[in-house]
Every structure is written in structure tokens, then in C-alpha cells.
Image 1 (cartoon, helix red, strand yellow):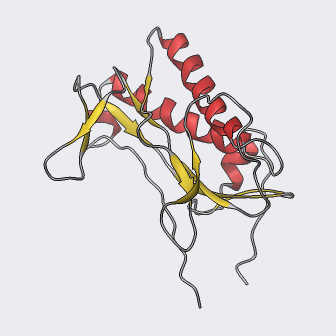
Image 2: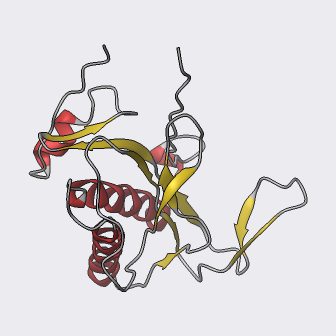
Length: 179
């Protein structure tokens, strides 16, 4: 039996939402919303680059509504996932020119916007794991592993397959039979 990987991330406020600054809570919420916008843009036969365009459009809209501009971290992108943690194709979280690769039936990918309240320029700390923005602005990261089928989407790292959230944003859900 082959081994498969899953990849997911969430951003939280240490101490709970009540301990968060309003701007940090908005950043977290808007980053999560951009993730779901990217998921909703995923369609078999469509350009994979539609995902990044939807993420960027969501963040631009949220930022304009709030009166600030988000920095989308471009050094880290989503990716294919399966027998290895990071596989092709790469999935940008921002608009890319050109049509890009077509989404293939059943291909699992990870969509993972990373968003800063300031400039997106970043570096890795000496622990070789922690990434911080150079201007030390706050950042958020959300990620899900998703499979696109001709019947709809299944968010592989959501407890309900993403069914409830997909319905709320008008995106088609399709359960995947694990057998």
C-alpha cells in the first residue's frame, strides 16, 4: 500500500481571538477567505492559475474594504501533493500571466496563501524553519489539500471534506470514496 501525504495550516491568536488585535484578526480572517476563494476557483480543465488570481482578488478586495494593502508572500506557493509532500505543479497564491497548466481530474493540490500586513519580503531565521517578514509585519497562513474532480471539489484536510464551506461560497462539493 502506498503512502500519501496531506498538508494543512491555520493561523491562530495565542490566547484566543479575544486576545488578538483587530487588525490581526482581520488579517487571519481575510487570509482564510482568500484560501476559500482559491479553492472555489479550482476546476477540472480550467487553468491552475485561476486559483492564484482568485486568492489575489480576494485579498485586494478585503484590503480595499479595510483601507490597507496586503503583501502576498511570493517566495512560498502551493503545490501538488500525494506520494511526496511537495510535488508539481506549483500553485501560486497570486496572479500569474499566461494560461498555465490545466487542472487534471483527481489531482490533489495544496492551496496556501501567506499574507503580510506589510511588505511580503521575508527571510528564514537561524533555526532554518521560522520565516519572518523583513519589516517584521504580522503575517497569516492558511492551507488545505484539495482534490478537484469533474463532479466537484473535496477538501481533503477539512473534517467534512469542505462541504459546508463550499456550499456557503457556491462551489460544488464532491465526496471522494476512500476505497
